[in-house]
Image (cartoon, rainbow, N blue to C red; front, side):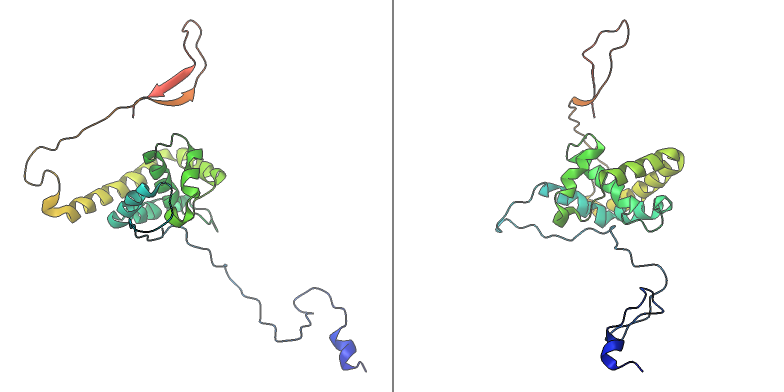
Length: 206
């Protein structure tokens, strides 16, 4: 006969069937664990009378436009097939984050770190390896990926014009003036080709 103290402090194998606890042990949960949703962005109010400085706060207009026009939801729905099982980050938000990065004068995938540095403004932002894997996956099925992205953009554009209503540019039948400012941006380094001397640097005009 084993007394109570010896029974309480006995050694047992670390298995669920042979568990020994001082209080009630809940049964193990079954199924898929809950995954945090990263497709949503925090809602932020901008004021001019508060203290503190937030970097890239101007991009809030872009993230709000994504939300109001439904472009964020459209991208999430259209690119859902490229989201691996149990993935944390939503492919639609990653592509939207890259678009915001370009608007903030980023010129490579690593520049998404600008958004990652402000989680209170842009929400959870994927790491560079996750972004790179998604881009590689989309490039591997480019026609279908581009079709999904263009469909999301078309739906968002239609909603934007509908929301603008009579205030939309050109709604009165007048001309729409488009002012384009072209700036040369260094894009990458290239090797000089034989017989074609160069600086080794290429550029593009966005």
